[in-house]
Picture (cartoon, helix red, strand yellow):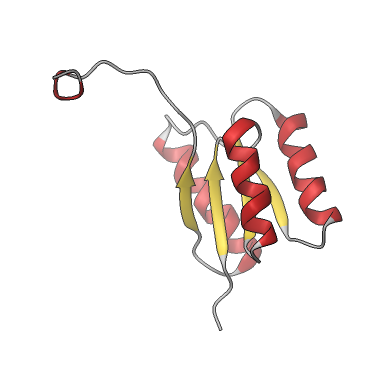
Length: 100
């Protein structure tokens, strides 16, 4: 049986943290990505672990391809499984196709 591993970008706060907690309750091992809020990510991880789940905090700037690849490698190495990916990080952007 495959391990269920989920990597959540923006997982340290708000909707991302709620997604991480819910995924852990559903049996997923959760990689909680953060860019600069390490304490918030650590709190989410500790909450998951205290409830019997598996979690780890993973620092990466998702705007940096090299950091994203390293983040996936780190999660995969920790749980020996390629993670599914959920992005809850939002960006404001102006794109002509989105403003029509």
